[in-house]
Image (cartoon, rainbow, N blue to C red; front, side, top):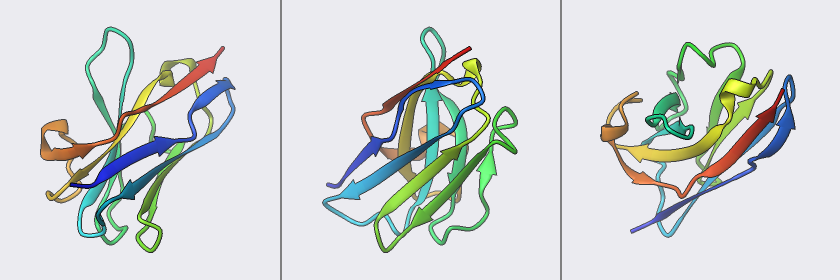
Amino acid sequence: QGQLVESGGGLVQAGGSLRLSCAASGRTFSGYSMGWFRQAPGKEREFVAAITSTGGNPRYADSVKGRFTISRDNAKNTVYLQMNGLEAEDTAVYYCAASQLYSSTFPTSYNAWGQGTQVTVSS
């Protein structure tokens, strides 16, 4: 079946940085596009970033463009989200997900999800 496990979340001050990791186990997701989504309390899950199976065509939500960078290492079966210049509005649970569709921004396009990691940015 395969499993995605996120790590790297935590508490950081505004302006700080975190790097999230999403490790796949039980199967390879190297042929899948991978995405990061986030969900803040009382809000819907929203797209953050996505990357194709080969690591190309990174896509970002406007709210994180220029601050976040998505990357992947297929040899390690891991996807990363480098987050710089964090803002209080970035506080949310961050999820990684796998999709057979090309770098989709829609959560419904993703059929494998991790359990999430909490990111809290203090202002």
